[in-house]
Image (cartoon, rainbow, N blue to C red; front, side):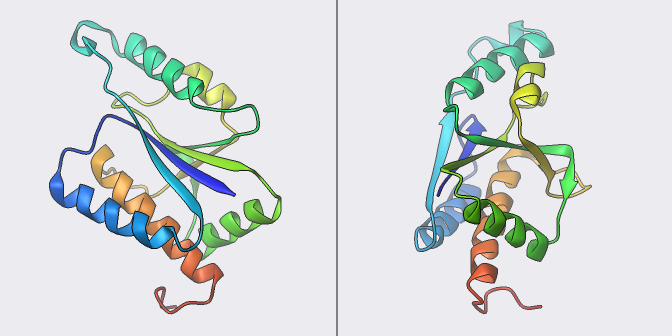
Length: 157
C-alpha cells in the first residue's frame, strides 16, 4: 500500500520541516509514504475564499487516481485514539487498497467537489492547529500507528 499526504503550500517553519522529515524517514521502514506539496495559489489575495477553495480543489483532485482512497483531515471528521487509528490503517492495508491519500486543505478548507470525492473524513483533535503543525502531527501519528500495528515499544499504553 502507498500512502500520500497532500498539502497546500510548503512548510516554511524549519523546526516543523525537520520533525516531518524525521518521521518520514522512520515511516520508510513500514510503508511507501510520500509528502506531496501543492504550491500556494498565486494571487489568492485577490480571490474570494470560495474561489481559492475551488482552485485548490481542482489541484487536489488532479493528484488522485480513480483507485485512490481520499481521506480528508477535517475538523468535522471522525476522531480516533492512536490505537483506533492504527486499527483503521491496518484494516485499509488488509483491504488491499493501493493508495491512501490524506489531504490537509488550505486556510478555508475544502471545495464542495473535494468533499463529494472524499471517501472518509478524520479529525486529529477538537482543538485547532496551524496547517503547518498538522502536517507534523499527522506524520507522527501515522508512524505511531505502524509501531502499534507491529507491536513495537514506541507507543506506551
